[in-house]
Structure formats: structure tokens, C-alpha cells
Image 1 (cartoon, helix red, strand yellow):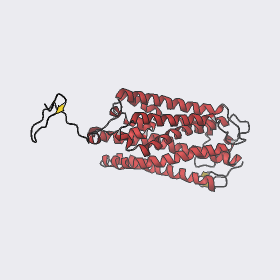
Image 2 (cartoon, helix red, strand yellow):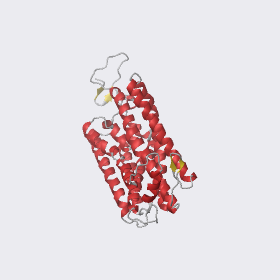
Image 3 (spheres, one colour):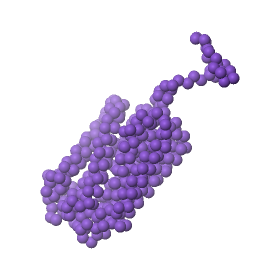
Image 4 (spheres, rainbow, N blue to C red):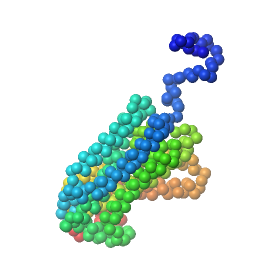
Amino acid sequence: AGVVCGKAQAIPFGTAVSAEVSVAHPWDQRVSPEMPDELMQKDDASRLLRVWSAGLILKQVVLLIGPAIGVSCAGAGLAQAPLWVWFHIAGWCFFAFGTELLVCGDRPACQSNFSYTMPSTVLNIFDVCTDALAAGVMLASYNCEDCRLEATWEQVAAKSALPVSIPLWSIALLAWLATLPQCLMPLYISSARDDQFIGFDLLGFETVASATRRKKHLERNSTQERFMFKFFLRLLAENAFQIHVQITIAGLSIALTGWTSAVYMMLVSIGTSSVMLLFKLCQLAPDVFAVFEMNKRDRFGKIVFFNGLLAAFVVVAYALAKILALFVCPQHLLNYNGCAEFDV
């Protein structure tokens, strides 16, 4: 009724428009809520989550076992990882970059955030890779005849606040296992949920996750779920725990063999995890206030919420103090009562 034979007819002001006529506004894309299945089809989004979840798990297993192939022993400290693992990591980082570039295309929602979310995505993938590599190098070092990491660790553990003799290799393996839930959860989300925004967020795809806007009735639950998953799985389990374990391993190795190339590799992983830890804290700041407002009438919820934040603050502050101790303490390790002392 407004178009005849491909030519537009003028409609007088005030004339009712038929329900069959759809009027497209240029600002529709900016105000309409976008979900991951609008950024791409739901089946494509589910397939992408499954592929990347399985791929990241496989990649971590390769980096955990791979350093044993071609590892170079470096005396009593950490072994040196083979060169091929860095090409492997670089390939995954470029693959992540290409994946988000392909998904976003020319969509304005992605392009507006691309400049600062894409480096975060690449760093997320690099961080997960170097965490697995650090655990793999630690385990591969035990194949070296002169390795004395475990014997030195026993001295440090005996003088700690919790003098429990837990093998260092098992702590390194546990730290790696703590990173797996963030790769396993998207496998469930890809098949059990329509809102797959959290799955991309868990995998570290910041551009795709930030370009997805949630519908109004899902906003409350999505905000709380985002906070819980990101706080416990990505911030505490992946970054904070990893930093503590890697600093301990690096400090022991420095005390035994000095500043070797293997130690510098570990410092790269520690630095990346520290940067991503601070970045995730900044990301979670808006969600902290939102979740607090949602639960301000729940007394038990507020107690759990504040205790969780306090625990996170203590863990992060102690991790930063241990990083400083690498350069300040004579034997490069911090204990609960000051710089650690042990025989090398």
C-alpha cells in the first residue's frame, strides 16, 4: 500500500499505516537487544562453543605433555621448554583473532568495541596456554637428574603457616586442573541454554561476549551468572591460584640456578596472569555493584558476597607481594612471616 511497481508513493502526514508495512529505522540496531544467536545463528554459536571448548582442552593437554619432548635440562632448577611450543601458542592466538574477526564481520556492535576487546581475547588465550605450559615444564623438570625443586620445596613447606607436605608437582597439576572448568562449562552451555553469552565470556572471547546484549528479563540472571562464573572460574581458579603456584616455582628455580631462560618463560606467564587478573577485576567492578543491589535485602547473601570479595582481595594482595619478593628477598620467596629461608 505504500509501494507500487517498485516506486515509493508519498503517504500524507497522519495517515494510518497498515500493519503489513514495516518501517525500518536506522537506529534499530542500536536499541534492539542482541543475543549471541543474532550475532550468528544459534546452531553456529553452539558449534563454535563446542569447537573452541574441545580445542582449548586439547591444546592444554598438548602443552602439559609436550614439554617432555625436546626439553632442555638446566641443572637443579626448571627445565627449558622446546621452541616448538611457542609456535603452537602463537597459532592458537592467531586462530582466536581470526575467529572473532570472522564472527563479527562488519557488524557495528562488534566494531565499536573491537579495538580494546580483541587484545584482551588474544591475551586470554595466551594466558591459558602459558599456564598449561608452566605446569608442563614443571612436570618435565622432574625427568632431569639434577633437579632439586622438590627437595627445596619441602624445606619451604616445613616452615610455612600450613606445614603440610604436598608434592610440588601435584600442586602444579592441581593448578592446571583448576583452569579446566572454564573450558568444560561452555560445552554444557552450548547444548542446554539459549543465552550463550556466558559461554563466550568463559572462553575469553571478549569481543563476541561484549557485543551481545541481553534481553531485559534475562539481565538480572545473566549479570549474576557472569559475576559468579568470572569471579570463581576465571579470576580465582585460573589467575590467582596460578600466580601463586608459578611464583613459588620461579622463586625456587632462581634460588637454585639463577635467572635462566626457563625462569624468564615463567615470568612471562606470571606477568600475563597478573595483567589479566587486574583486567578482570576492572571488568567485574560494574557487576559487583549490580549483584550487591540485587542481594542487598538478603542477609546471608551479603555475608557470602563480602567474604568472597575479602578473600579475593587477600589472595590478590598476597600474590602481588610474592611477585615483589622475587626481586627483594635474598632467596626470592615470601613466607607468612617474611622472606623464606632454606638451604640450597
